[in-house]
Image 1: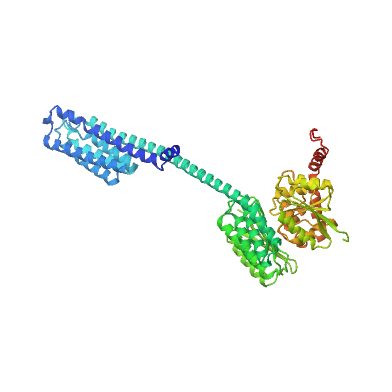
Image 2 (image 1 turned 90 degrees about the vertical axis):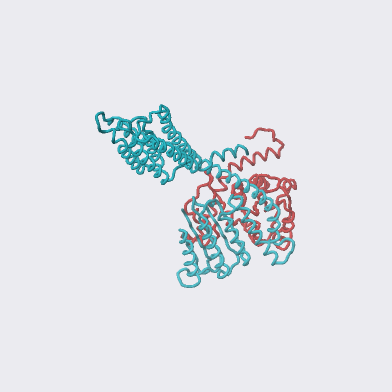
Length: 398
Length: 214
């Protein structure tokens, strides 16, 4: 029991995918922190003279840190980032990278004094990982452009830092693409794991259901065995004339015995809900109309579609009704034979029969049965001659 | 049919035996002489009725085919009856040499008719027996011709023999021949097994059970 509960938890649907998203949020949060913190060391050196307005740069840093905390807290709660949060992050970074770059005195925008370089790469990676390739590339280009605008002062003058700027832009693009690729691999692995887990779960449930069905069936077989030995024998004998009971009661016993017999043999075929049991019920109902029915069956597939079972049972019922109304006999034979995955069911009597080629009661039933079986892809063949009984053959194959 | 037909009945159900007795007492040419709960008990009576009605599955769990062999060994003709036609056993009794098979739901008339037909040597197999044969799918089953199979399956589905004959395009006479041929094929298929059972029984009856079987 304990074992199975543990397995259930492991097999929770989508567990691996959710775990991967959470892990990605955490990893990108750590990355952003690692990109933001080094500036504190630079600030500790106290080189505030490299900025036009040191207060503005420090204030932006604090504001940015607050935004980052907010962003990743929300990300953790939702195990991911909705598109508009990513858009906002890109906007915040665009503003900061332009503002801080512009606040750096010439020659310092491409150095560690500009704290926005690392975070901008972080924002590019975030959009690539959580917004897909297209939106990710748009974000990368936007952020690169903003970076270039921010450091434009260092690209001119006596010693332009063009190389450093290009290096940073290439890093931004390369890291983002690599991260996007890496995240996609992680996710596809998680998806496969989840699929395998779901499959295992289904298999286990199916096995448990099959086991329960087997147990139920065994119990029923046992009960029906008892019914056969006691009730069925008694009913059959009473119906056949034992005990000197009234003819009405005898008839009733015979019908109940027929029904029970159909059930008992349907059960030993291991299909309590299949065609055999359905035919058992039909022969019972028709037995109430005073018909003695000999019902045999063998090898009928257990998994016939419900609609087919229903159509066949209704067709047999109609054919038996016809025996009652027109055949002038009180005896009929119903058989069901499995042929591969298909089935042949017949209803026969030794009554007065009819001419199948002329209009009359025969024509109506022929048409009605054919329509009924055609609806589920089956066929009906009726063979009758005046004075030679009637034979109805119902065929259905997959 | 001037002579009285003597009949025995073997069934573990006392009620059925009583009922048979009352039925038969009303039939002028048939007399139910002996009844027993098992074949063993019947054999101990040391008698031989013309026809024995044998319940397919007796309470002592004796194999139905062995029961038939034992009774035919005594010189009786055997008509097997049961409530549910368990196809394997029905076929086994046919191969063991039983004359026919009926379900118990048939009333006394069908039983009396069958008994008279057996004595006259012209018993028509019941549709239930035909059904068991058409559904025989053992690898070593007797091979029926396509026409025999078709006739048998329509007959097994409850058509009269005449209608079944018409349906497959042969005369009623030919259809009857087909049925007899099928029955014969099964009797012949069962002969080797029957001989073995008979020998085993000879040993048993002679008190030679410890001898190795041939």
